[in-house]
Length: 182
Image (cartoon, rainbow, N blue to C red; front, side, top):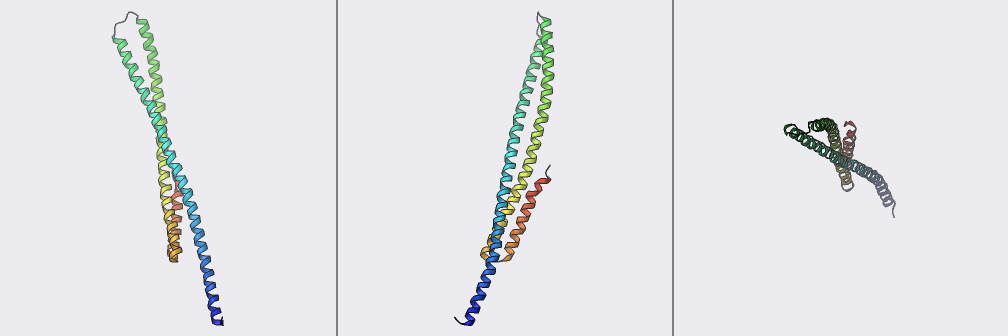
């Protein structure tokens, strides 16, 4: 091997080493972005699940509320019938009407409490959905970032890498904006 060939071979090895270092950094960045995508995905799934569970609880509470309202209406109807129908035992009717008044008061109080509880769960649904949207957007931006960084491996163009990292950072910021949801 001549001296010029050895010099050329040496230069090629140096360039390959520098390119290898660059590819290692790109691969590491892709790996980190992929891990972040997985984390944000899991958080997004948890937010969606939280919204579904809160909605189910709100529905259960509204069903209880409706049942109380139905009992209230039925009891009022029975009381109306007791008042208008002639009866030989007026004392028993008055006693029953007094019991029913107390029962109607309890139903009203229970209904108010259930209504407040259901509204609380509906607010929880709203918050969870707002969080889920932010996680979903963050996940999408991170995934696009991974793809752009991967394109860098094929094209060797730094622009794709910078764009990928930029979108990755935007995805992280979007996912972190969940902390602003109250």
